[in-house]
Image (cartoon, rainbow, N blue to C red; front, top):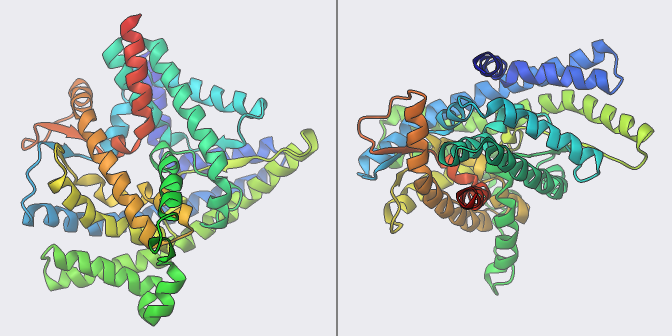
Length: 423
């Protein structure tokens, strides 16, 4: 078991920039592309992910001190510290359920494609940590490997279907042709985002408000350009956090650069994926006429759109205020504040980029996330203790907003936990 676990940790430890070129190259060969063409496509995807990772990391590194200053300067005192999705994923990949859940998820995807239950071919292996976390929590609390594995099958089957359902908007609104986003913490919110958009669309007067990127740009002129919006939002957050003038300016310029460069890296990444997408289409057309496949990727490819990134950044101060005023909330948002753009994709995609509706939907998402991450804190703290993670001295419990964003998996968790109790 230790050897198997070490193997999986090694493979995952290679990172998405190494894993994706390998996966894409193998897929290209499977879909009957020349090895040279498949390798070039895979390497192009890898280079795109490297660029995306570098720029995203720069953005997060720049904005993290700002979020910490917001927390410290406005005296937030809450008992469960948000230590980030990175720790949550390492906890998930560090338990003994990993090999069983890993195989179960791949088998679920293959079976669903074979029986035409999904069109999404999920190559985003890294984000298996999301169903893995719930499976690990179930194994911890029920002691049943079967229940833990079954939970991952249910959770991923749901997200494959949602990824299919939302693919047209991912393609038309975000410009990601042939791509779907089978990540629970991102696409799971489509089940909230679309009803919220419909509801707001029924409110007289309010339904006519449309803060689209185009309208913002036309009203604000040069200040509505993504570059200037990034400068204003980034610098504004740093100013509110009472940062020095030099850091206000540096933050503004870095966020401005992010809004310009991330879409360009996504475009490079898409150049490589288009080769595989077309090969998959040709492969399926020959063997299964009329069938189509979507390539399931990390939602990082979707955060480069100006309205997604803008909404995510605007939700940082809103999330901090909500954490302070919500009755019964015990979560201190911190590390995952910078990941909010990932969680906000389906707050704004349903309205085709209406920032006004996106903010209201984002508030609902954050409220649910805070309460669920608070409920998950005892489990995450216990899992962290089991693998030897050092809990911060000033934290009674630890949690992650990312764990809370996996909202429907907690319905599965409590349902199977209850079922396991009966057994």
